[in-house]
Length: 339
Image (tube, rainbow, N blue to C red; front, side):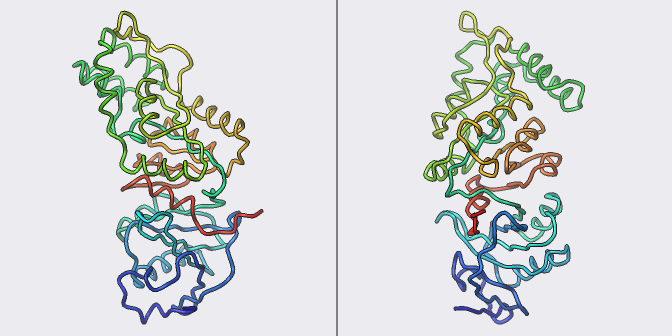
């Protein structure tokens, strides 16, 4: 099939009507197959995923992009893994990416997710994924759960609120919150460590990336015992987190060593990238909070994971709902990655 009329097809799943990984031009509501492969380092790739696309849904997306200056669109449907639904990439060599919040607002109304990428990473080349831990690789904030088990949650939450209001920086907030945990038995730490709830899709994403020779790491403002346990669960290459001080099997209320704050997370990314000899384009940083923004800005691609609006707005792109395996959509676009 070299040409398909979008107006004439009634299929609820347009992916069944075309050839996966092939590129099509849109002309007069027709998809016309082309042998041209868009260049990864030029233009904007709009990636839509999370549902089956009918012709009407695709045309609605084309209209939205056209209204915002994206013209001469080429389209490709691709499927990074069998467990993911096919995604659609609409490539344009004009315009700059739109605000992630605008993309989120539009696509949420349409029932799918929409992101835009420039010069995306190539999963088939060696790369680095550096991720936050709390509320990113796992669904909880460990310090809150320790405090809850020790019945000091309200005290810790009060310090957290001060930090969120900008009254404390991260290091001050961390030290004051950990001080509230003084005297807690190591058994409580171990109890929580063995019951960490992983973020849906994180295991599958790590398996997918390891199969493609990617280096996987955590840079967390959380704590080493939990980061090391997550490392063992999902096969990470290394972890960087804060070290809790213990004495007589109880927390002293102090953190020792280098504090993993926003600046340190960015340094970790740069150090690993240099050690592995990676191009910046092949580095991805993933997180949910303001403490992750410098790391995400340093990476070739910064991905907000179920992030707060401020984080979504400043990130390159966002996964707003569903499995983290969907990050594969951002790394497996069928493009020409040669320079």
